[in-house]
Image 1 (cartoon, one colour):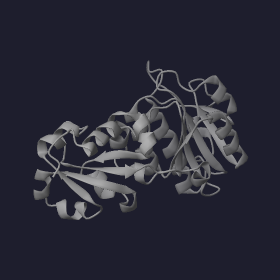
Image 2 (cartoon, rainbow, N blue to C red; image 1 turned 180 degrees about the vertical axis):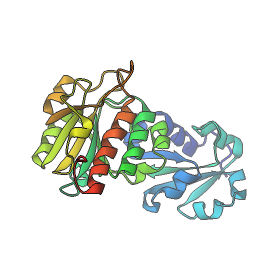
Image 3 (cartoon, helix red, strand yellow; image 1 turned 90 degrees about the vertical axis):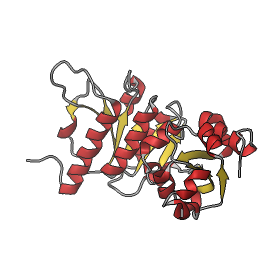
Length: 265
C-alpha cells in the first residue's frame, strides 16, 4: 500500500494532473471517479489507484478488475486528488491518438471545429453535447485549452472515450482539407449572412466552426468557411455561450438528418 505522497507514482499522478507538458510526454492523462473509470475502455487503462476505504464500496471488485491496481492510504489519495470530494478511485489512461481521416466517416460526416476555446468546461461540454447530437468528431486547434486537462475530462462525462478528437497545429490547412473531402464548412458568426436554421445540412458532410468565448472566430478562419451563419438574438443579448451555440448548430443538423430532409416546409 502506498502511504506517502512522496511516492514516485503519486508524484507522477500529481504532475499529470497539473501539467500539460507532462501529459504530452507521458502520453497519458488521469481520470477520477467511478463513472469515468467504469466507462474507460479497458485497453486504455494503464494503472488504477484506489483509496484504502474504497475497497468497501460495492463497485470495488468490478472496477479494480479492469487493470492492475495499487491501494493508497486515504490521506495520500486525498492529497493527490484533483476533486473536492474524491470518490476514492482514479486511473492513469493512455491518450488516444486520432488523425483527421479518422473523423470522416461518410458523406454525411458531421464535425465540430473549434478555434481558441479557453474554458475547459466549455470544451468538455461541447464534446459531450456533440456525442448526444451524433457528430463524428471534434477538431481543436492547438492554441485551445488542453483537451486532457482534468476539468475538461470531467466535463465530457465519459464522451472523451467515444468522440474522436483531432488536435491540429494549422487550423486553416485543416479546414481546406475538409472542403476537399466534400464537407461544407459553416462559421458561426454574429454578422453571419444567413440564419443557422435556414441552411440544408443534409446535402453533404458538415463542419461547424465555433470560436473563442470572448472574441469569436478570427476573420481569417471565417473567410475560409463556405457560409457564415448566425443565431437570432432577442432582447439585449449580443451572443450566446460558445457551448450553447455549438449545441444549437449540431442539433439542427441532427434534426434535419433524422427527418430525412432539410428545413421544414
